[in-house]
Image 1 (cartoon, rainbow, N blue to C red):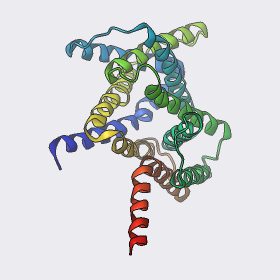
Image 2 (spheres, helix red, strand yellow; image 1 turned 120 degrees about the vertical axis):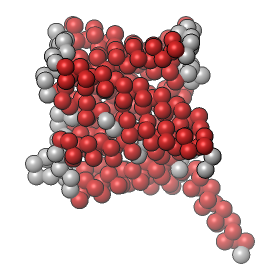
Image 3 (tube, rainbow, N blue to C red; image 1 turned 90 degrees about the horizontal axis):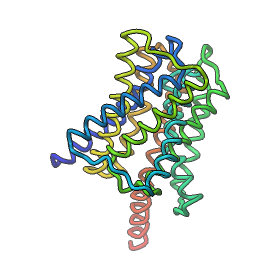
Image 4 (cartoon, one colour; image 1 turned 180 degrees about the horizontal axis):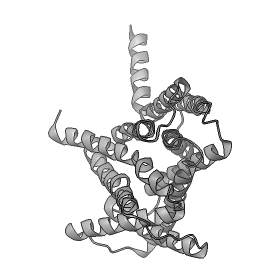
Length: 305
């Protein structure tokens, strides 16, 4: 395997695994009484500061075109909704399960592209959607001590919808030519402003209470935000978006492992099969085109015999 491709695969794994660390750093801070809005304000603020430093080091321009500003505002809204709903969802279900349900976003992206942008559907796509629905159903049987919570499921599912719309927006709006670092910097910066305003208006702002919370919030900004996004861009440039997306399956697996090892989340057979079904569904959607091409080639060869 060429060196650049190996680095690309490594970056893809790092990116997806880093995102799975969100519950490790967010749940301890949440236990101090800090509401999700305030927590996300600090996450976005620290991430924006880190990205600004990196942009200065790389001498990357901060300049924006006027036509890019509305798109950035919409993308920021989707990213903010996704972040706050996912953190809120951890109050209603084990962290690994919440992250797995959130990971339905590639399925949602496919449905949005088919329904609104006239992207061609296929039997592989529909089979993947059916698998995803079955997987989510299996996740409803968490355990006797962690029953299915419809409200919690709805919150986490909507976080996935918001993230899916964010991904579609990045590809379909005027910011599609912007570098990943600059795009992430402005989304984080706008998000920090939004959450500072909302926490101030609702009088829920909270200063960071202790050293441990400082550490967790900084790590929340660095690992699942800055590192994850920069590694994602690197991976896409070296191995392409399809393979990078497949490696995204590390997200729920990382979160489940952290939930079980660190937070003593339950792990049952239905959960295992549910996670497997969802990951299989997402992989089918991501690989639908090469799978269809392979199937067509096999059919042609069979007819030629």
